[in-house]
Length: 171
Image 1 (cartoon, helix red, strand yellow):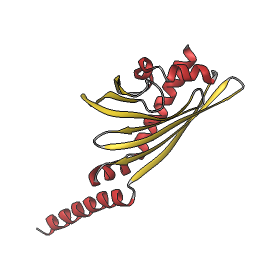
Image 2 (cartoon, helix red, strand yellow):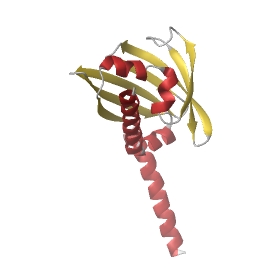
Image 3 (cartoon, helix red, strand yellow):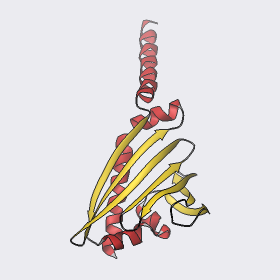
Image 4 (tube, rainbow, N blue to C red):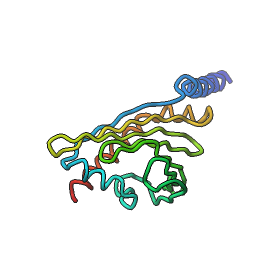
């Protein structure tokens, strides 16, 4: 009986810590950077081609234009992706776009929202990409989950940029 109390106490403490972190860290922020050995115009052409998204962003299955001018500021699209065998959808809204230089988007879904930007800077025919992401969970459980997932989410972004680099440099 004594051990059961200790085990229940530890479990309760872990649950409290899990939710406390979500309260104290309601959003996470991370950056990723990569250099691609091609001019910004070539990088932009491939990264903005919706048909190529599944080739460099893990899990994306397809996109569907919803409203606004396609591939311009104000455009809204649904992005369908595979989440462990289940199809999920998130809505993308383009907030800012300067061709060959910058794109900023908001993503919304049931579990979380993201503010994402990608800046391209060309020097001597090479393009430096800097992506910035701010992610906020929707609800206390989601905030808590997101607060523990920063490393995983950053690693995924790093992987996606490496795949984009390979895709662009092979063209």
